[in-house]
Length: 475
Image 1 (cartoon, one colour):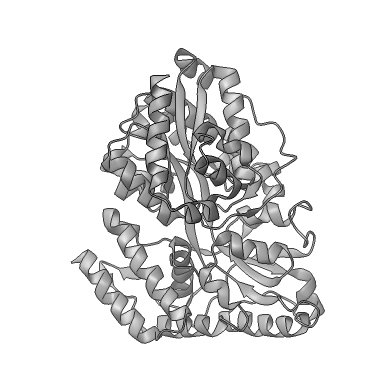
Image 2 (tube, rainbow, N blue to C red):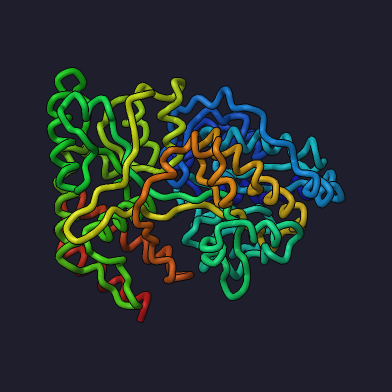
């Protein structure tokens, strides 16, 4: 009881730092439960709202119909049984199908091992998650025991996390994972987190509308996207005044950094930081930002400058957009009649390119790590071994279109059938995570600069200022 009381006090302190309005906007009904004092253990009871794999706004997602989750593997049960009756506190996004699957997994884990899983809300936005975790780390809080680590943050979090490879089960499991991700997650010899989901951005498009307006193929270049979206929008607005050609993540947050990296690299503008030098200020990047600025209020709604993943996804799956840039999680929702009006009328393709560049998809993904201050590290490791292991990764891939990080799972016939987007060939671009502990500051410089251009600012001037800001982080 003392531990549970302490958990409640710690959660109350973290939530106090959020405004009620912002908290409810990001977490929907689950946030309302917590904000009114219903308690952290209850938040997953409200998993009827939707979310994204990497971003911001909440929306309505029908989560009914998920099948039972896999049983906990016997080796994990053996390792966890000794902690029966203990509680592991997990930081997680409670919304959408992912939140519902987490609830099912927690119930299965307690049934098979006797270890209780209690959840605290992780913000939908990666940028807000970073701020929340910094408060956790600086206060040396022992909970949450399990943290959700974005692929760009191992360098920033390493000093605060337990070495996953030294914990039971996780060292062996990590040897089966994509070793490029494992290398990314290893800082100073410490494995900061075990990969549970990989991500990359790509283009969703309406197959029926391309056919209707005479386009044989989805756009290969950004100019073709602009032209196709313009023609389709002009025709569709007659029957749907709220229809737009293209939606994406334009808000000033981490999701816009991902979009910007795709724009820059796909047009030959470089990776923002190349060989230790700031290269963002160049004519190719000025040109693509000017093109993107021209979308706003034309083929994209004016409000796209405040769009996160779910705002854009909602527009597409309700039939109000022809093209969408987003992550793999959207695929299962767009194909689900309970959550989509475009079932059977969409497909996916690499994002467009321009100039001398090639199609690029920003790398995303989440890792599960153990708080270095946790008092139940081995029990937390058992939970991670269950939810990142091959059985649960296959379940998530088939039912949630969560990209697997285990090669054998990615090649599984059932997984490939449920995830045709896995065959997309594109250049995988990484954000400038080599900034390490300064990454969040660098990303903030990037997304604020790009958002200012989308809102009407001067692209050349913004990139010149961005170069100067980033220079302070590498000098």
